[in-house]
Length: 149
Image 1 (cartoon, rainbow, N blue to C red):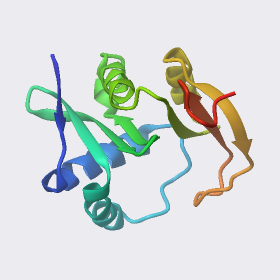
Image 2 (cartoon, one colour):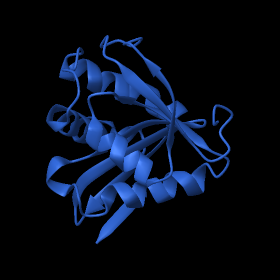
Image 3 (cartoon, rainbow, N blue to C red):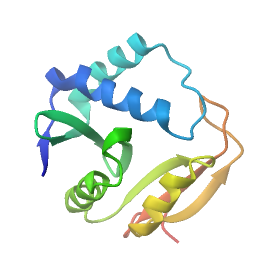
């Protein structure tokens, strides 16, 4: 059974660990920040963002971070993928932001694109790598987001 809890700054290390484990296993460009920097960054931004952790039992298996109408992070631990964790977090995101959401996905991350499209997101823009990693990415929107077509 999946339980979703609101996260706080005290959960920063857990959030960072789920993110790093999931990101390392995903078809994404290599991370460019040392793990300790990611942990520090996570701790620093949590007070200004809305974050949730998904649990199976006592193990954190998913993380979602919203900032305004932006879905900043949605990462599911590789061992928990395909078990409804992402869908549960996505349903919560849509409840929290019923007017619409936007997000970025790396072009190489085809599984994430399929997931978001399955949940009603549509691609609205592409870049040739206008991001820290220098990797092509795709902007997606859902609902009545201002960038929606």
